[in-house]
Image: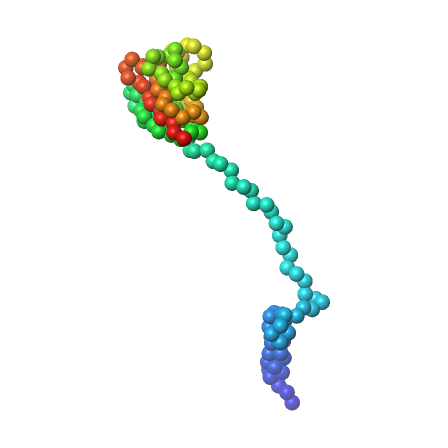
Length: 163
């Protein structure tokens, strides 16, 4: 009489061996074979890889009137073409301008559009603390800008834009 444990042990060895042979796909002969029940693994459709897009340089921040002082921080910066400068007004009574009529100190490279944190020709328009003004620099060269109400007290900034 065959004991139940011996029978189950022998049967499970046959099943495991058969299963493992089926997993290798070689039917135990070392060469690949397929059966009617084999199905290919589903594949994801190919998605085109987007071509890299040029990225803009990160913005550069300048504090206007930090600690209630009559200055820009930093006062001088060097940036690449395409960089945006963001001025944050930290105290009252200030603006930012490179408009030629605002101060004789203002300078812009040839072909560059002057910038101002205010509209029109009122060069004593002021920005509220906590507000920002930004300008993207697209023309290389040297820029000199001022806070019009305080340019006589030395509130002048310098930007060098390089290729």
